[in-house]
Length: 120
Image (cartoon, rainbow, N blue to C red; front, side):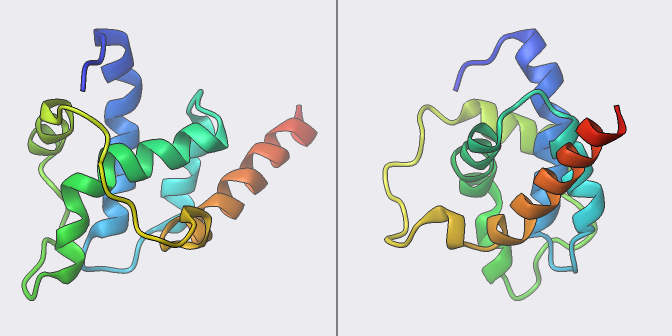
């Protein structure tokens, strides 16, 4: 995938935060949702970033017997995502809105963004 330097600056911390959903630990949902809520991306775009950019690179960790649990190396993660040539060709047959981890993360992001609107 091709990203400009400014796109990489915006996406890199988001990719790192979203990759934590694929660690062999309980995710820090609030921290990850806060990263997403602060990003300039719409809910639909965040979902696409999760499933088309981050998920293909790190999803196998959830199935590993001795998976990564401390965090993916940020440089490795970014390099793998950038090196991908295209969006995934195959998608699971059920809607992404019902898939873990999106079904847990999306309501938190929405709540944080609504809280920002009412606080302002």
